[in-house]
Amino acid sequence: GAGVSQSPSNKVTEKGKDVELRCDPISGHTALYWYRQRLGQGLEFLIYFQGNSAPDKSGLPSDRFSAERTGESVSTLTIQRTQQEDSAVYLCASSPAGSIQDTQYFGPGTRLTVL
Amino acid sequence: GNSVTQMEGPVTLSEEAFLTINCTYTATGYPSLFWYVQYPGEGLQLLLKATKADDKGSNKGFEATYRKETTSFHLEKGSVQVSDSAVYFCALPSGNTGKLIFGQGTTLQVKP
Image (cartoon, rainbow over all chains, first blue to last red; front, side, top):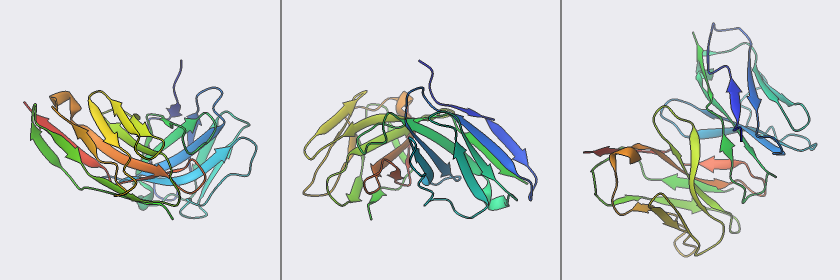
């Protein structure tokens, strides 16, 4: 079946502009995660959606970052007034139920470059 | 909170050499433990996992055993191939949610 998809695959923007990154999770997966991977570093958790519960936003680095999810489908990560330190690969993952035992399935990522 | 420490790379090996990538963790309770792999130009994918103490996860010739006594989950492979060249990440859930904490990643390069 279809995996997690993300768009765009690459995004180059100017400092100060807003960007939107999209994630389509695996159908039927109730949990959706966003992570950030800076060059040469591990993944940092950003935000987590589980069903209709309030999202866990504890990983968002600043109030310039926000995310939404429509039901149990598409999610959009928005970065306002982008800064150069926002340059990274943004990864989306989904899992069947958000359990600590669940495997997370990752999308190919969006590479964001802020000039 | 939960944390994970992974050996730094890069690791360079010749084909058919034995591989160990160390991973130790700090956790409340006994969460599942994961190894994810990122092949060049590809997305992150699960390599193997173990869901309770003394479990051994295995896949593609790789193995890792969930050691409660030493709080470790070291990744091993008896004979690496050039195609195993990738970045390997150890991970565990944070608290009671499924959000993952990742190690820094270990780059493995296998030379023919």
